[in-house]
Structure formats: structure tokens, C-alpha cells
Image 1 (cartoon, rainbow, N blue to C red):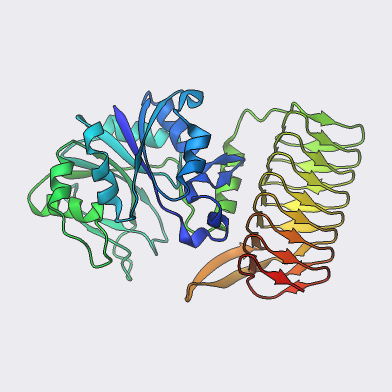
Image 2: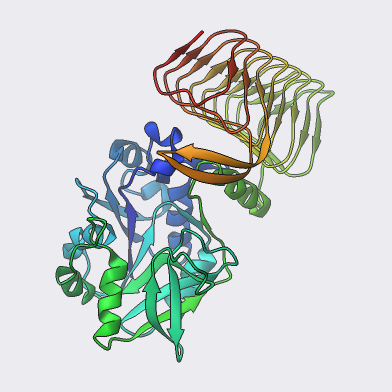
Length: 402
């Protein structure tokens, strides 16, 4: 059996992090989201994988290459124009001549999800669904006598708690159905429209409701929840770095090769720290934190429930909580990210809700000493923020803030 992973989109609602990488390459517990999907497939014996790529495709190809390091064989299909999920699937038609699995590359899953679909699929099409109390923003599924009668995309009212995960089992007959699928009102060819046509023409469309791990990180701040969940599930956290005398390590903590935890530092797991990092002295790192490779966290800094990507330097006396810091940032001493709850964050003229958030900072920024960022405010990429600035609004890319 083969699998097709849709990984061509940008992930606009995850900006500014996706200004430099596609959403599928955003790290959770120091691994890209897409890696979890590929490993889940490999654990189920699905070794032939086709990736549909587009936006920032070079980063995906450089990381995964031909898949040999992940125990799989990866082929690539380029989607030059983002014309919808059905269009993306159709591009890969020459590579499939038997039943295959389709997945979105930006959803975190575990191997149990794949196993349930692989073992329980039936009918012309099988959808994998999950039960959710909150279904706002998701497509939901209606059932009639055990078979799917309708897929409703993002309904305003709560008409079902059965969410469509976007994970499917198809036969090659789906390609003919896609060819007959009209363009949607949004200007895309949607695979849910194709499936709805199959239902209306009397085809058998079934579902499997899973209790496995399925996390859809819609916004950048949703990565924090995903990071917490994944860190809590990792059972093989290993320390191969150096812990100096006087440092205190409590709980499950992974410290990468050639990293040093200096004296007086206090770390409470679950925490993962990458390679070649210098932590402390007298630095506090609290649960659900992931720190990437080549990072330096100076003394008397506290970090909690946050994601720090590769090549980040944080000055002494800083406080970072419920925040995401992109790669190659230099942050001066006494940096503070305020934390707010029940925030309304405006993106492209629309308000989005964040339960709890400090800040989200993109890549390649230079932030001076004594900078304070108000809760929910974001700094894009390539910005320079001078000493003593209070960031009270979102900072666009390549800005200089005096």
C-alpha cells in the first residue's frame, strides 16, 4: 500500500512562522509536523510515500530527500498552483494503481490512526473521523444508517460532532471522479466535493471514528498544545549532553549531543533540548518546552511552555512563556513576553481566538535589551527592534523599530 501526503500549502494562519517555511515543516518537540506523519506510516508498513509539494518545497526536499533516513521511499509531485485538494491528488494519478491513503501534511497523528484506517476501510471511499465538542472551522460528517450521507464544510451551526480529519482511503477510481468534479465557489477543486458526488451517485462512503492522536494546528499558537501533547507521549527521552554539578533535572528531559546545562540551572520535564546548546548558569526551563539546536539561553532566564527553534540566542534575565520563537533570532537581555488569556488576534481583517499566548516571533530578527512584547503581538521576519521598545502592535517583516 502507498500513501499520498498533501504538503504544498503555506499555512497563512501560521504566519509569521510560515514566511520562511511551509506549515508542514513547523517543529513540534524539535521535529517537523510532517516527520510524525511519515514515521506513523512507516510503523504501519507503508513505505512508498508520495509528497505533493509547492510552497517552500526546497526545505521539504532537503530535509526528507528520498526518505531513506526515515525508513521509507519518497517521491515528489509539484503543485505549482494551489487549486485545491482534489487537484493536488489528481496530480499524482500516474503513481497509484491500487488502494491508497491520503493525508494532510500539517496534521499531527500517531501510528494508531493509520492502523485503524488500514484495517477498517470499506466501501468505495473511507473517511477517518474524530469526535470533537468544538467543531468551529472544521468540516463535519452526517451519517445515515452507518454510511456517510453528507459532508458539510465549516457549518455555522453545530449539526454534528463528527469531524472530517482529511485522512482518506481511496481506490484509483477516485481519479475519474475528480475529473468530473466542478470548481467550487472558492475557486478550488475540493476532494470533499468529489466525495459528495460519489455519495449522491449511490456510492458507498463509510467512516472510521478514531480515538488516536489527531491534532490540527490551525494557528501558530496551536503548536504549543501540540508540543505539550507530543512531549507528554515521548517515552524514550535520552540525555547525552553534559549536566554540570549543581544543575537540577526533574522529570523527563532530553538533552542533545554536545549540549551543556550549567550549574544552578533548574529544568522540569517534559522538556527537549537539541544539540550544541548552552543553557545557564542559573536558568529555569519549565514543562512543555522544546529548544532546538545551537541555542544559547543565558543566566537567570525563565522559559515555560514554549517552542524555541534552532540558532536562537536569549539574553540574561529574560522571561518567555507560552511563546514561539523562530530560527536565528538574537534576543537581548531582560526580554519579556507578556502572557494573555482569551485573546482576540486580528489576521487579514479577521479575528481569531487564542486561549493563552505570549508572542510569536518569526525568523532572523535582532531584538535589543529590555524589550517587552504585549500579549498576542507578533514580530515577523528580518526585523530590528531597538533597546527599551514596548511592542504594542504586530511588527511587519523587515521593519526597524526605534
